[in-house]
Amino acid sequence: MRFMLIMQGTASGWDSMCQWKPEEIQAHIGFMIKLRDELKDGGELVMAEGLDIPRNTKVVTAKRVDQPTVFDGPFPESKEFLAGFWVVEVPTEKRACEIAARASTAPGPGGKPLAFPIEVRQVMCAPVVEG
Amino acid sequence: MSDGGLAREVERLLQELAPKVVGAVTRRCGDFAAAEDAVQEALLDAVAEWPARGVPANPGGWLFRAAWRRLADLRRNERARARREAQVASERPELAAAAPDEGAGEADAVLQDETLVLLFLCCHPSLSDASAIALTLRAVGGLTTAEIARAFLVPEATMAQRISRAKRTIAESQVAFELPGEAEQARRLDAVLRVLYLIFNEGYVGSSGAPLTRVELSSEAIRLARALRVAKPATPEIDGLLALLLLTDARRLARTGPAGELVPLDEQERGRWDRAQIAEGSALVGAAFAKGAVGKYQLQAAIAALHDEAPSTEATDWPQIAALYEVLLRIDDQPMVALNHAIAVAMVQGPAAGLRRIEALDRDARIAGHWRLDAVRGHLLERAGDRAAARRHLLAAADGTKSLPERRYLLTKAARLQPG
Image 1: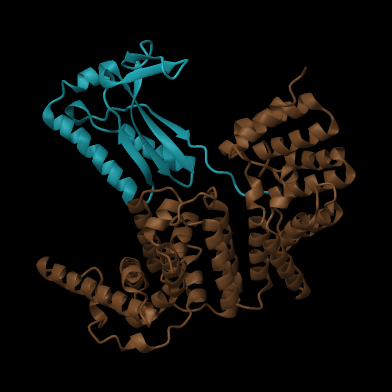
Image 2: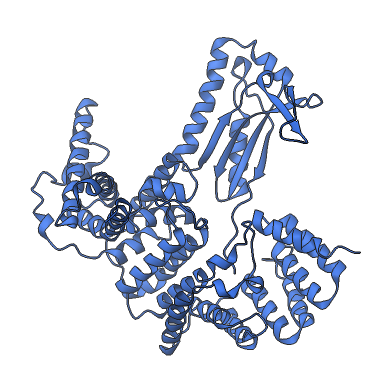
């Protein structure tokens, strides 16, 4: 089974991260790298990416492909944005949630766990052959 | 021969030789995990060199020598590392104990077919499905890690780790590199057949425009089933599995619509079915039944043969299929089998009879509330003329399925039943 683990960020969260001490940022990054390696070593990692910050994001809408509307930043009314995600291949949803719990403990200021909410959504997979 | 033709020839040859070389190297050095890694490296060497320099006169011997050299390298590195870290014993003492510096006189020996030993090893009950599948494809199938990773749409490093961990599990379970006794083989054959069926099922069903190097897992499963049949002849359940794979694969082209959508059996264009595969599958089914003992793969194959031989859904021998499902339920009481039985009963006695059978499944905790129950209910209710109820169940099934093509199919079917 494949699951996408989605890490939601907030604008205020991002701003506060910019106030962290260098060693706190390093610890956070180190944690993410270590988690990625563990998932790879366990044969569970399909994909893991961090996404660029909202300020560099664009939102594109179009009724005609040659007349798009392009806004800077994520949807104005949304307070949250997708910060990053993992796609893991595991035998049960329980295991996917275990990994999500681990991701949620990523450290922040003072090395304390951030307790990020991590969304766990199953990836639709190919059908079992029947017919 | 064109470049593409030579590459395919090389690939075919390497796949055939891989299990033989893994067997020979393992027997010589006593370490399956190290041998398998070494052979994988040798295969990569061959893929790089043979198309350019030509296939060697003794390709098996070439692979054996290449793998042996890799093992020697591994051993030297282990010893050097052990010295550097001032360890008393390296983590792989069995490598130090082996004597791979000896000349590879083995290269001239005839390579035995170790397919059966390897299949029992790689499909050992201690392994998870994903591990058994990956290890079988590499050690027995002779596929490279990259090919297996691509087939399962997983990064290569992830797949490599899965295979390493699988071998570690086997080492920890202390599984010997020997053919199990007849009684033990009979007990463990089911695990082997199951892994091959899973490989067939989980294969990526690509379009006909697939690139040359993409591995078609369904074809690979069939190839391995054939190899198993040669390695362990006169085993009806193996014939049954091969027949089932052939009879199912025969319908492959008709199973996908022009937009890549799912086409269920009763809507498939039967002219697109592969008649040669059907003929071979049917012949195998007939021969297997003639031997007397009847197992679940033979029964499923017999049912598939009845479908494949029928000119249309209406002209299908549904009473025979229903009877076969009844026999299958007696030896393999699975709710999904019961569901398929209900469909067959509905085709013989009308949708109401099928729906009554499904009501019994509502009380079976293994399948109650499952989206497949809703899907079949929806299908039968439509045939019974209750459009509103059919639509409700089809929408519930669409909510529950994890398959995108299946969801789209169910939503489309439900949409056709909208009032007005």
